[in-house]
Image (cartoon, rainbow, N blue to C red; front, side, top):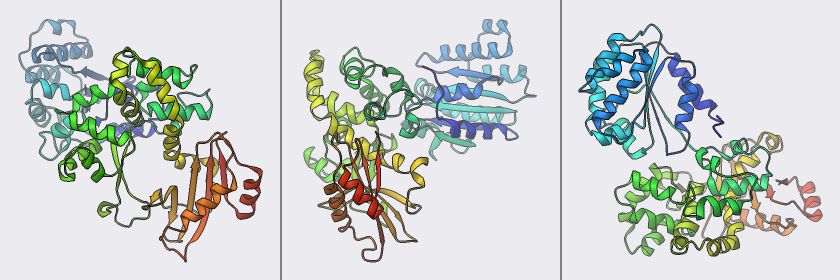
Length: 463
């Protein structure tokens, strides 16, 4: 599957930069397999371009490969017989012979490998851009998968190429609301199960077979040592980080359900100060996120922050694969699969809660909402938790939402419990207008439906 799905806004942003007069310099980055190259190739269609994919070869071989790419662009086979001893030499030849009457796109994909092969390359390219390319009718795209390295070589203030880019684009995984485009013929329940395991990384999505059930796909592609995804997180973290032991331990503990940094530090027998840098790095990599109750006025200063693994596949892998490596390395996948099946419903229920905004604020449901939410998210205190709370500060209105990934019909006790928990929320307590909503996997009892109709409670079943 090489389907181009969902990247309309990103593609539009690149086209907008390309349409501007003069030269352009765009940086595209994001984790491996997220679809950066597919996006670039969609943009390049029928445009004059040089596409250069870097890798870990010797620098002399990389110069030769760039020369060959330029030879194809110039339609000059004889160029492949010329030996260039430096990056400057090959760029000088191209600039001398290229026709810049129409804007030329120059792409370096996996840019970070050039910096690995020669740590001076970002400085070299900065000089080439400043002295030779910037004044030409050219559109440069630097694309990279190692996020830490893209920051250090291109994006941060101290990097050689800082200030040269005219735009930057971090490509994120596909959101659930667009996930169904990859699997148009499966049920919503199966769709949520798939999304819970592989998340929104297009390459992972391509691996799963929609004709098979979730457990076949898990056993075949994740638990098996021959599976495409068996060692994927290990490879990603090993590429991004020089030391992985502490990162793996942090992610394993969070995947098992611990959310507080203090408790995580205690389990690792260290201080929270020693872990701050690790947490910040995982957040920068898009693997971890800090959440605070939606009613907090100053999120950055809140002491109620909890940490969640942001990426579904990493959450699954650290909970079931990393924690059971002894069995999996001995090919005992059946044992691990049986353990997994026992609490898989609980695992999926957390994803169901995470995608509640996509369900509740969908085009279909928007008309049923009692007000326009200004912000939304989870709420919790020491004793209670509400899956989703949407608020409008100006109107002092709050919508309290409970999600249930249960095979049973939801009864009225769930609504009564939600109301009770809402009573513990201090946000404009006594002067706010309250509304309630329930999202169910299977539906609602007649008793609850009748009560909801009388009280204008929003009910949404996915099946």
